[in-house]
Length: 62
Length: 465
Image (cartoon, rainbow over all chains, first blue to last red; front, side):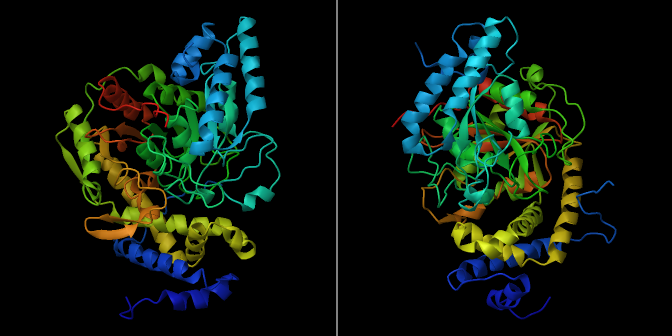
């Protein structure tokens, strides 16, 4: 993992136009807080050891 | 005459079927109680009085003709406003959906309830688009806790908790993606059933997170939960997640006791991260069930995975609305959804793999036990408007964290009955989750009924302010 601290503001700046979303100035603190919370919570998920052949939960049956 | 609408669903149905009182009487009392209490408590966003009166007359006519009106004859119920109700706009707690046409037909579960003789009295308030654990709503106001109206009902099925705890209806239908039945059940002191994922069809309801969405009932008695589940059960090809299996009714099993059942406390993740009252409630249930064993469960990553899937799938559902109508969202919901749109796909794919891994771990535990008990919420109902709470010395937002104990369980779709515990002369209750293996709602309900019969858990109608 990168040692550089995660900056949610940079992510918002990059992703908003990519997604076609307008993130107004008054939305940014809330969005940034939720991105930071997600980033923190994701570390537990990313650290979990899962085999390469593990299947995702949803199963599509044609 | 005692208000018959305050009886249990089973008692109302028995009284109506036995001509002790009519469905019309019950409905009139229920509508009167809604008119009296809802201006204070704000459970309903629409009251379908004309429809209720007409349905009650139809039930009474069936009885007069000597025919069977169904097992829920004359029982007043209401549904979270994400259930389609013919002629009513399905708001899903939002301002944006007001622009939609009224629903052209009832959702499958509302139709099944009425086919069983129940009387729909309206649509219930909820957190916007179900992304909520508080019961607050910036557009329609908060649904209030009938036991203390300055406190939260819990969400997102907040109106369900309010309406049943206030005695406005005997039964309510809600949804639970990460805890939205169990959290308001805990905060409002009710029995709530989140069935196994795929047990009940979601056809005709506004979704939130398809991977995680469940529907289920609230009640003041365990028998009423069982009757309601049985009335709503059945396959539905229109919902691809709904199981095609036939499930035997659970009501006949309700009073068969708990002899031979192996029950343990859920430890590890479920034994920290809450206020003392959450664990006192679990200990009280454990003592009543003579449970001494604890199973350590590492659910932190599972909760994280549910959190990420919810953010990403929720954002996917609402992306176009976020582009065009962002100013019309509840700001708390909008900001989470915008952030959710920025979650990497690689995280979500791994979260879905972790879901299967955690399911396997929990199935292995259920090889040894029949049920686990765990806290439902980390605390009793916060005050309306409270944004932060402190747990283990750490400040955290209320809104996403009231469901930290419910989220890992719905993540893998296991059935849960939340049971209401009143400790220490407190004004407000708190819930405990009784978790069973997939498709074993009967076991969770049997345990809940055993506790109810022993007087350990109870869901009284709130005293009127």
